Image (cartoon, rainbow, N blue to C red; front, side, top):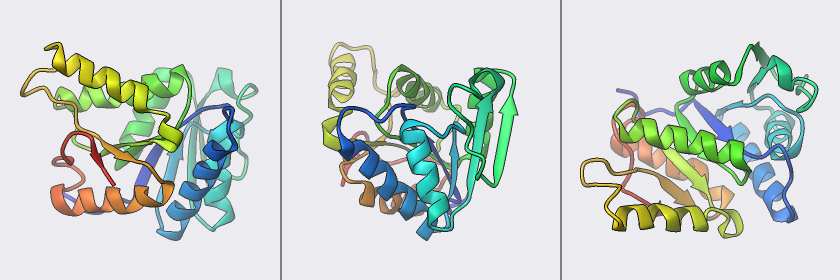
Length: 200
């Protein structure tokens, strides 16, 4: 069991959203990752919040691994400056490699694709397929409606005892790395994550 996080998979939008605060949070996270020696694993694009967080990591001397499907190379414009850029045949391969290379997962604001990636990791964790920490960066309460839905599922009896969904919620980008490191120290990267909905 390891208590060291070396790489973080960041899920986020290929757009910037309607408020500059989203991009600012992505830049802050990218800088924090680089300054703490944490490798970014992400979708490989150079647009939207994806590009923002990756460029911030690179601008501050960090390491980036981008994984992008062949059919998205032109649409999401590959980030050529990444130290490692992997082109894969499909989305399934992309997600599998992102999972394998990461010690933890962080979801920034994004669209349907970001939500799908986040929920997949939460599902796999719920089913005992992995125990890597999962964190939502709740910039401007972006994830609040989703968190309300999760609580509704629990209250309605569809998230039952023994099948809890485990995740962290950070309200500020500066808190992401400390929260993940604390989770690793307390529970180990491969053996458990903090209590449901823990916030800092």
